[in-house]
Image (cartoon, rainbow, N blue to C red; front, side):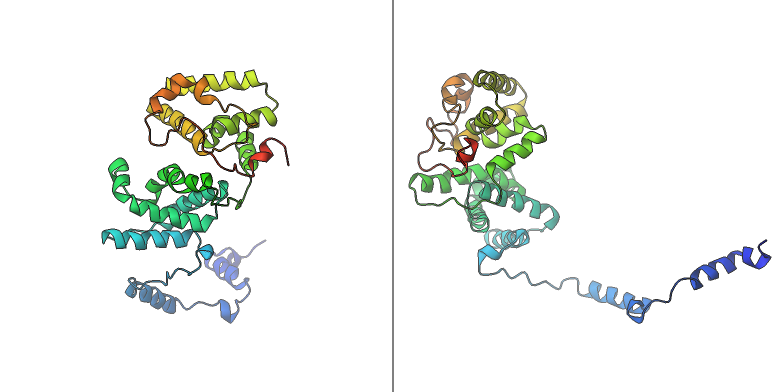
Length: 287
């Protein structure tokens, strides 16, 4: 039977505290010193951290690109860009992934893309209303067509930098049940070739499914029509292709749906010339 002393709440609290091991000196914290440290931080709130960028762009990380964007923003506008690393890092990580998915050195070409975006700043603001990292991300295909593909056709650029293979990216989307995303991200020839080679679909099955998908987008809302535009644009931008790829005549087969986009700056009646990505051979099971 417990005594009245043991049942006393004060006794229980003290007993609980005393039962804990005594912390080491290094673990002790002076509450008054903590307050002083907090006050010091508040007094030096305007103190800037060292955001100096490494001279070698290959050493830059996503945070470096946020800082670089902010520097250029001040240089071009005289204003201060409010950095939000949590969201901005994600944007520049996506831009870097776009570069590597096309065999380009991530840091080098991300920097080139930012430089190009500031050169196109007035046009981007006119079309999109804002000039932010999330805004310029929407102009990646424009940049790629204007700055990269001409070099591909001239055979003056090597696209050998890959962090993951195109096939791996497609399989990941497929496993997640995002079949439509494969067409939107990679375009018609790549997606159709994948379904024929790796999923074993018959050509008529692929064509029928694709036709239904295109019709549903064309007859949908504004967002659906934008997705159709994106798929056609990706189909062009991802060229040149290997001659054994499927649906290379997609412009002819789906002419009635393509007509609406034939006046767009990105439109081409033929695929780009030059050397296809080495990764494309994996889609034909040649490696």
